[in-house]
Length: 288
Image 1 (cartoon, rainbow, N blue to C red):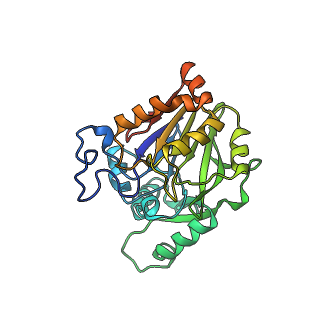
Image 2: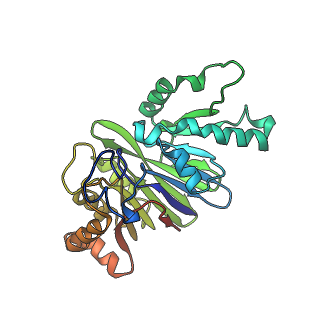
Image 3: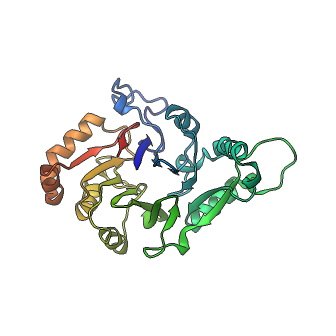
């Protein structure tokens, strides 16, 4: 099972339009960040988490040939507005299995708020259309009925929703498990309910934790680096990765900040000494 970072940037992406800051002008490829999205893949299954406005670019860049399902964290534009490009995968499904296309659309999982927004914003996906004009064939699946005892099952993957808050908006984080391998993806979060922390801790030791860490300064709807590591300290995965990063800090300076401040997080410090890591993620990073 692999996790590929298709994008690790915040809603503006990096470089930011019309910005001349050092990070936006950086020649370091680690500082070139598309909007946040990851692909979970094994030999049989490809699961996409979020589908932002650069999804077409990401799909071509990373040679994605198949999408089996989409997991939405929430319905903000930088996580949803590439949904129309899923129609390419509808065409591939039609070519490979024409008789089943109408009965097996691509499933999109999300909470009730996200699915309501999606259906309103992209209503044409759910209306009968005249001949011509392609559209993605999708089916919305509300995650409200899934829990610790009843995971979402896609291929050989077990997927668990993690309720979070992005400001006042309810969002979904996800835990993905295959056999003994397990990781968590928690982006666009500014508050983690205690029950969600307990739920995460109930899974035991994670191989990887990916968590929202926007910048050094506090933000009303995202974790700062320090806030992200406070939660990571409680989860204590073998490897922790910050994502949804903005242009205020370069990749190298983010690494330096973590190194300089890791003693404030004793569990993470011990994990690093045992071969673990705490790092900023970057586009194209593949976790095995």
